Length: 222
Figure 1 (spheres, rainbow, N blue to C red):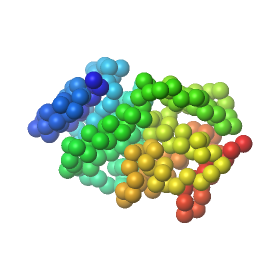
Figure 2 (cartoon, rainbow, N blue to C red):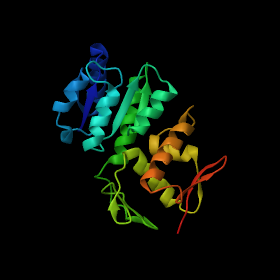
Figure 3 (cartoon, rainbow, N blue to C red):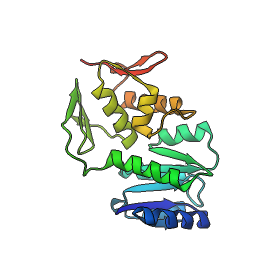
């Protein structure tokens, strides 16, 4: 059973999610206040479903706090669904976002997709090395020049896809599917661009990840 933390101040909605998620095989803890997350043992949580509009501490602030100490997968819930919210959420390290209103079945599918990508109990995968970058998919660990890279699960998945296709163009749709679990949704191009921009900064610039006009990106094999 996987442990989920749902942080949502709409109590009926939070309870509805608990009632829906529990029969799906999840253990669900509910919080209705952003400030309460600080007292939660995140080490016991597999994924956080986090509303942006929370009392006392916003979802963005809670996400910042989580990212200071953990790469725990986080799905944002937002009633506004503006491009700005989506981009800011990804910049802060969110793994996905779900606009309200949403169907619980869609949320479950998103949760399962992210947990599949981050599941450390998967069959062992060989380490992947291209130039100065090395990934250990089983441990979800990344290194650049021998130094650890601090990556979110979405960034890790995107970098892994680029490295496995090093020297070949990878489309934005393929990268969106690898990193966010979705294809063909409006606004994903910008989200992929945001993740690539963050990866470039963490890899010291734009030398490794090249833009392929009208297609996507390419990791330069060296």
